[in-house]
Length: 492
Image 1 (cartoon, rainbow, N blue to C red):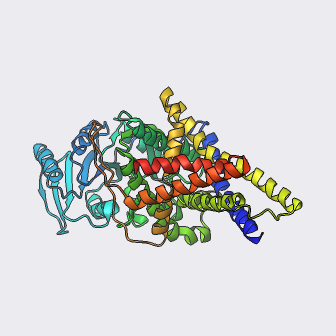
Image 2 (image 1 turned 180 degrees about the vertical axis):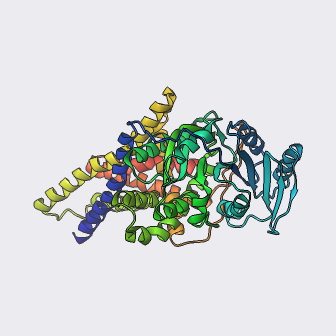
């Protein structure tokens, strides 16, 4: 009896955490249906702006990205490739492009850095990739200050910005001194296969639903790693990028808000980029994001709670962002307490429960199911709005599969959260990019995770059958995990 009560209480508490997360999904989804209006200063100041493209062994895409950046119509711009490549191909390609534009070698005080400059293109190359992407940007900051840049527009190596992106961002950032950055829309390029369409559908929901909803609600707007314009002086005031961070975007966003600045979302500026080319690459990318976010949660939890400068509303939205991937910790514990409950009920361990207690437990279980379903449908809610806004009928068909893919990464997310929170050393995983071509990308299988998913499939499948056979009922919570673990076992 005491074990049953403990399990039910545990599940109730976990469900409350999940309900809180789902409530934000519904709230931002509804808020995103309202138009976003940002103040604008129509007088463009014409301040020097650096378009900083972060690059690491990305010879397939970097020339294409530079070409699209050259089409930006803002006059006071310089394209700077912050390059950490060591493949012997990408750096030579960049130096050749710069030389064709009249580039010459420039002096550098850092022995790890070599610079080649032209009026239009600068190659800032580090010989050693120290501190990952954030370390790359951190080492670039003194160069940007010395050259008198006022703004930087940060891009990953695969993104194509729309031609007037800088003008539109400057109009917004110049209108309000509290704005440290303008995050713009990122849309995934979806023309490869059904898996990539599912990845893109999930990523698009962030920029078509979640961020617009935050902007309308006045909550924290996340810098998402690229496609954002920063005030360089504000960036310096908060300490710049922090080398070594796996999720430099979430980490920097926290420091900016704690300093009293903020970010805004400008959905009218669009950048198109790529998604992971296959399931294994997607799992590794998501693991890095989850691990880095868990590190940030540990670093900033008490600072946010103790902060007196943040409103309660913004503070709660920051805490929600920092625990975004921790939802899968709740789900992992919830799934396996459900497993234990079903095993105990199916084995007849609770036949001695009296009628009064049986009614209480039955009502608790009856309440649990609709709440859990409603929480899971909060993800569908955002994906549905996203698919509607993209305007492709086929995307609606991929919503169940996109949800299944998210659930299939349960163990991946859980382990990443644990490793991130306890600061287990982790390298950087660079998501492969193909320049929108049908190129087969090989990614090694994680055999340990495959084994964990297969064992989970056997456990949940076996108990689903046992419960159905012994009671004549179907437990939907158990049934939900069977296809998820089957998918993960097949594709990881």
